[in-house]
Length: 449
Image 1 (cartoon, rainbow, N blue to C red):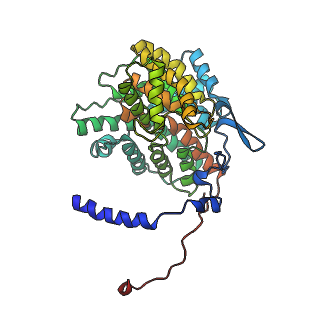
Image 2: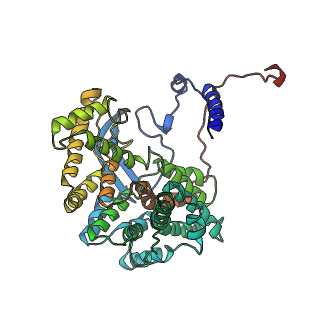
Image 3: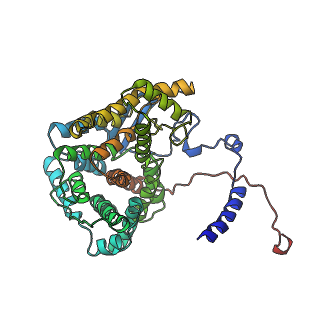
């Protein structure tokens, strides 16, 4: 392997030498890097009726920060959460229904749909043994992607792109994602860490949140508050507009007129990235570092001094980044973070972790101040949902390797809605332009090189 690495490293040097593009050319040709305009806003490439993400207004060419807003099918996500909590019930299944079909379900419709999801959670015969246990993966997101692609082989009508069939495939994937992730995690624990193998069958009458907690725990137990907090996280992560990286991946791949499983697997691959769904893991790693280097978590001066070191690239990973702060769209606030913070306080009190929760709140106050003191930029920066979600998952005793898979278990609802929207409204394959900047070269015969 060492010899192979040495040989590949030589090739890598050649690749690096001949694949560098002069950064000045991006400005010369007005390239929208990352599909972003010069002011940081996204390039408008499509229309959607599924999710609205709003965090600023443009006034005479200037970007003005405003409080963040997130709507699912026109309904504010905070109202959706309040509605479920007021009635004392879990709301992720209702959220799935809303995103997928575009309307809120009536009582009997929600009951029937929840029952359908429950019936579909069980994996096809031999799937667990042949596709999950026989080839365990150290990374659960890779196992999730493989499980999605393998599902093609268990579908007798996999290539049918009619609406009813695609909808059936999406509902099956929504129902099975928690099982894919939970079983993939159990296989990883057993084969890579030597732990006992626990495979609990999903219960048809339980919600997504309840089933997931039940399947990942050896004793299958959880509290009512734990289920409520996980359900809240699933609601808040279910959709985030057509421009987020994984939803856009769904649109791009689906526009090529491929099968449902290929489109969804592409979104899973996108979400795995540290700049997307893997962000809450980065937050937790950073918080571990802060907690080990700050003696008194309640000391504002000590916390401020260490944050200054992080932003000055003198501490933690020396990137200058404070993970969990800032967002591509939200400016003054991320509505998901505000909702999650208020409920995280209750769980922290129940778990005896109020001191740690207070550290998060102190950082929420200090990071914008320290960032502006160091950078002198005046940029508005606020915590995003990743800042609190990892903390909530840790209080739920959910292993970190399941944080991003949990994101996927939630976001498959939004992905499915975007897949259907692309099929019904797309029509053209998505193909942005790339400017070729390599000068013409003559071919040199092999004997003359």
